[in-house]
Image 1: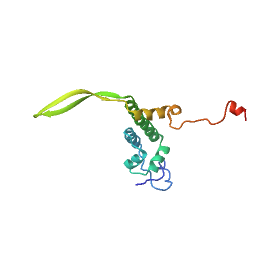
Image 2: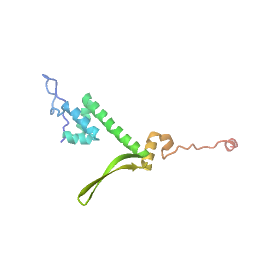
Image 3: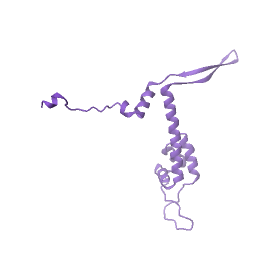
Image 4: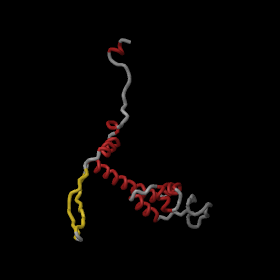
Length: 151
């Protein structure tokens, strides 16, 4: 459902036309929670039952909404970065295996080990140190030295 209406007027002022906005200041807190869980602008629009354009407009017209979305998306991005980093270098954690034998529940504690992942390493390096790790290398073409001087 698209809601591309104008902002509600100040109290006592005449309405400029169009439908009143669906925006509610409580949306900033709700959007922050959703974005911390990885929600995109399209998913915010679906949640609030408005168009993506309306969400974009709310970000421009309501600083508290914009700030909440930006901060929450940064938190989610940082979690993904940490996860990618852990995947690149490898990690381990304590775990419990639960089985059943003759009606008895058996639990066994163990250490789960995840070795470094080469693809995650490459992705990390290409993004962190583009000049050294990108696929495309800049090569200077030209003639130098004695060959250039003999021309």
